[in-house]
Length: 126
Image (cartoon, rainbow, N blue to C red; front, top):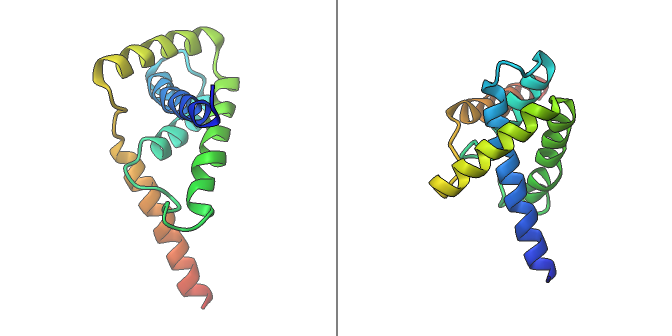
């Protein structure tokens, strides 16, 4: 397997795990802290816009390569094993049937809120 194939598989797993967290957010067996982490990770992962746009050299892809996998890893570690396995099966079925990830409108609001807050802080500091 080439390095490019390995990266593509890793990206598919990240995308599928983001969808898995989307299902875990809705599961009543998910404890409160993991649910909050899942919501933030899902809002960011499924948002149609990025917190750091990809056209910014290095940083644009760094958030997708480090921040998102770290949030997903933390959420998966905190979720009950049964919830993870059931939600992974639901995510695999979703990805196979829909050929796309769901879009989270709250993610847009989250990203725009962060950018607005940073802009307000910059204006206030200036």
